[in-house]
Image (cartoon, rainbow, N blue to C red; front, side, top):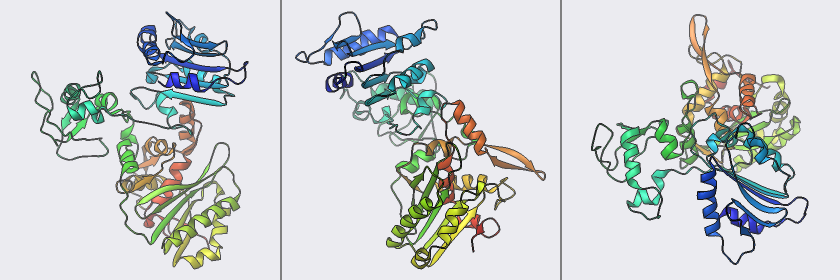
Length: 458
C-alpha cells in the first residue's frame, strides 16, 4: 500500500532527478512471489503505471519507477544493485532489516543525499542491540514503532479477526516454550499477563497458568513475540531497557508540585550538544538542547523555563550544572546573579557539580558521576519520562560500568564519556552522552549535591 501511495503521489518535477521506490527482502522469492504480488494485487487497475510481468518493477516513465531488490551480497557484487542516482523523491523499504548487510544501509544513505522528500521504512524482529537496524532507531529524526503479537486482535479475540495473520495458538506455544511463571511482576524483566488461560503442554514440560498468571519472557520470546531487542549488556548498565520503557509509558503520578530540579550539561567541542532537563511533580523531560557554547543562550533559555515553573507554583528550584571542562562556569555565574529568579523562589540554588568528584557513598562508587547514574536508575522506577529524545535511551541503557579497586574496596565506575563516544562511533553513531548527563543531574537526590560534593557559587 505504501509503495503504491508513494509511487502515485510523488511524480518527479525534474526529469534528471526522478522519483524512486526501492523495496528489499532477503531472497528473490520473497521479493517477487510475496511482496510484489501484493503490490500488484493492491494496485487499482484504473491508475496509470504497470507492474512489469515476471519482474518486481513498476514504471511510469524513464525516471519514475519502483523496484524490488534482494539484500544478499551475491558474491560481493550486491552493492551494485543499490547504486543509483540521487532521486528528487525517494522511498526505501528495508524488510527483515535486522539482518540487512551494511552495504545496503550505506547505499541507501548515499542515495538519500539531496532528496527533496525521502522516507526510509525499516521492518524486522529486533534480535540484538548491536545491529545497524537497532542503532538507527536512536538517531535524530527517526520514529520508532514496536508491535507486540500479544496485542494482536487474533490473539486477544481468540479467533481469526484478521484473516491470515497470527493466531492465539502460536502465542500459547511460545509462552509454554520461552517463558517462566513468576510470583511478582518486574518492569526490568518485561513480565506480562494474559487475559486467557495457557494450558499445560500436551507433551514435555513448559509454562502454563490461568488468565492473570505472571510470565517472565526469555530473550527469544522478547524479540520474536514482543518486538523487544534483548538487553544483552544489562548486567553492566544501571538502567535496564524495560525500566526505561515503563517510565516512558507510565501515567504521571504527581508528588511535590512546589519542588523542581534542573540539570544542565553544557556543550564542549565537536559533536557535543548542551542539554537542559527538568524534574518536577513526578515527571522529567528535556526542556532544551543547545548547539553552541555561548553562556547567554543557556542563561536565557533556563531563565525562561525557571519562570514558567514559578508560575506553576514552584517554590524550591535547584539548578545543577556540570562543572567538567569549565563550560558550565559562564551559565552558572549568570544564573546565580539573576535577581528575578532569586525573587521568584523561596529556595533558589545554582550548583556546579563535577562528574569526577567525590561520591556520597564512597564504599560503592568511584566518583559522583557513577553515583548519579545509579541514583537516576532508582528514580526512574517512579518517574514519568515525557517526550524522551531519541538518544536518551541509549545514553542511559547502554552506558556501561565496571568495578575498580579503590583503597582495597571494589566500587563501581561509570564508562568515561570518551570511551562511550568511541564505542558509539564504532557502531555508526557519532555522539556523546549529553542527554544522559543532563538527565541524571536533574534526577539526583539533593544529598548528592551538598557542600562536600558540589560547589555553590557565591
